Image (cartoon, rainbow, N blue to C red; front, top):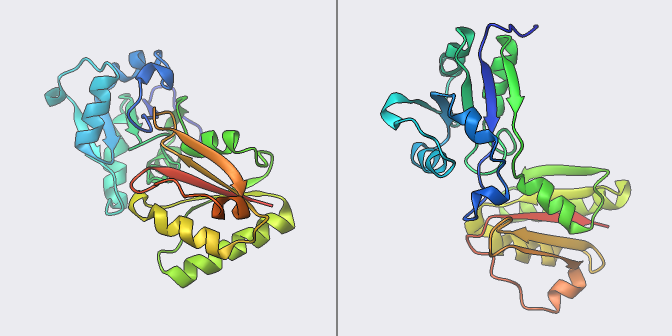
Length: 240
């Protein structure tokens, strides 16, 4: 379906990855865009308001409509959220951290916008996945992102071995993540499951003062004290 120029635009608005100066990773030109919006679709109301205030949003929040998007949002609600764009009002979709629709539920809104002929405009901003890949020294020409691996230990171990095998067979970088409070368990499973010569990258707290990025072989990781990754947002990469 062609987009209608009389309709509003769905802006995909990146947010910060952590506590860091906003002007280091968020273009100032976005400020004008967000200040022309009075409808936002967000994952968490409190953090969305905090980010908008930090970004220089000038309208009182009691004049702004916020829609909450999560795994419980129904298709009917999605249509309702984006309906103002059909009448010419542009809408902002905010990620909880980083770029919308990457490892978050925003793609449901974007898919609905395309079905309704509403223009989708992605804005430039930090992506933990891309930043980690850039800094890893691994293959950036061919890579796969797998999101969260299984919570159950044996299933996770099996998948890690599959990712290692896939990296060897295809030469692709394998990228995945974990809920921050389970990072240390993930690191232990990676080191126990993968072969000594497999390359493993940990990229944590990207764009912040505590940023940590290191790529080493499994053998080298095992010879060192592991960094404390507990409750630190991180991306993990495997390569052979």
